[in-house]
Amino acid sequence: TEEEKQQPVIIVAHGYTASTFEWKEFKDYVDSTNAGIMVSQVLLGGHGRTYQEFKNSTWKDWQASIIQEYQELVKAGYRNISFAGSSTGGPLIVNLFAQSFFANSIKPQHVFLIDPIIVPSNKSLSMIGIFGPMLGYVESGEMTDEERKHWYKFRPQETLQQLQDIITITRKDLEEDR
Image (cartoon, rainbow, N blue to C red; front, side, top):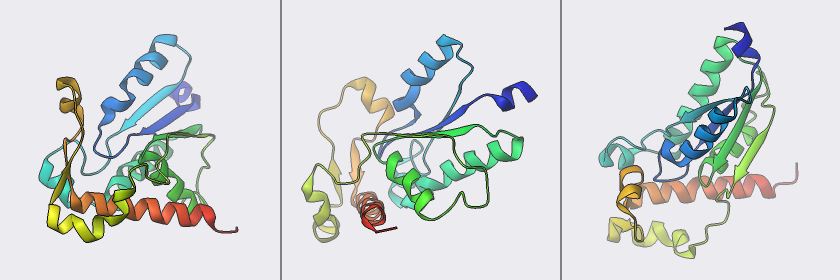
């Protein structure tokens, strides 16, 4: 409705190997407050489908679903759009600004980054290009049964290389003197 189009919409992007479940608690909270805010949970490209699709996906595939949701909201007439990204969702959103994606469109009202992965806490990720092809995949740490329903336990080296790529690109973009 026209009234809904005036309400704030927050596009939320989850992290690497995750799903929209990562933002479920936030969406449920916002919905319960009747604050007049809508939350759009984006499933990153290649995530939450099959392991093979995930393995074959690139960071640009991950980002494409964020772009698509933003473009569909703008096309539908929404003007009060914000972004929130956790972990890998952070650099995927930051990259849109670095590439001047919003130069000729509706500018986001707000951007919230929750624990964005700009410098990986696991320093071995920088070696994935060397050791990844030999390993094939990396297994994540202990997960509960509930977590296994919503996150990939096995992290293919191909996607870890993609993760390293978007982290490196984003870090360099942030370090540039603009």
